[in-house]
Structure formats: C-alpha cells, structure tokens
Length: 134
Image 1 (cartoon, rainbow, N blue to C red):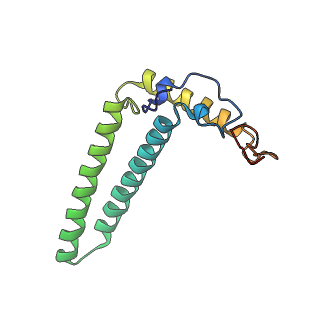
Image 2 (cartoon, helix red, strand yellow):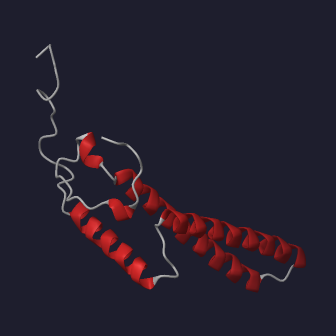
C-alpha cells in the first residue's frame, strides 16, 4: 500500500466501515490536506474582510498605515493559498464545471463519512495480531 498523498479527485473507492485499519485510510491524507487548505483560504478571506472593515473605521493615519500594510499581507497570503490549491487540483475558480465536480465529490465524501459508525461498541483488536500472552 502506498502512503502517497492523493488528491480529492482520486478518492473513488467506497469507504470501508472498518476505519480503524490503516489500509482503509487510503486517500484520507489528501482529503485532509485539501480540507485544511480550504479552511485556511476561508480564514484568509475573513481576515481581508475584517481588515478592510477596520480600515474604514480608523481615523489615525499611523493606524491606517498599519492596517493597510496588514491588509496587503493578507491579500498576498490569500493569493499564495489559492495558487497552491489550484496547482494541486483542489480549487478551480476559473472552471465552474471542474469546481462543480469537485464539490460533488466533496459532498458525497462528507455523506459517506457521516454514515460511518464513529463510535463502534467493540474496537478491540485482540486476536487480530500475534499476541503470545493471550
């Protein structure tokens, strides 16, 4: 089994309900990476909005200069995150059809994860591995 990170587009197999086994986590690192990147992108957008709002409320020219500088840094950060996401195939802002396909995969994956029994009654692996003391 390969432990390479897969993009969300590559997650095609149905999820196995036995998620405690490492082999059933195939594709999850790529899914987690894309999810964390999207959350980071949303946080950057929120920061831009908040700084722009703050800029309209400040009278002091020195404080305005600081907020303007922070706003420019936040815009640059947003650009870096979105460029990285586009390069990895996690974000298609200029191709609505591709983004829609990606959103459908994400929605189906979310539904599959929601259907997992996250707290099964028996999580024991006793007997699965070589256990000479038992």
